[in-house]
Length: 70
Image (tube, rainbow, N blue to C red; front, side, top):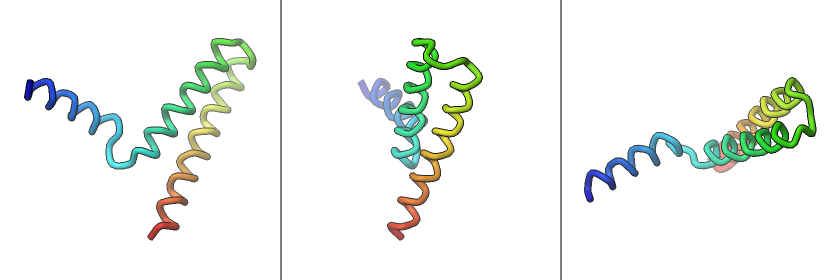
């Protein structure tokens, strides 16, 4: 059982890392991008651009929240 727990802790630390907010931004933006692409609502080049802009905005917002706390 301890090996399973260690395996789970490794993946949690690998995916979440130091900042859960960044992991949430990545998951949310990638999910939204997958929905856009799967539905065919936007062309592929526009979806990639929107995903990149969403990542940049999310990272900037997460860093701004961290800086304001200190």
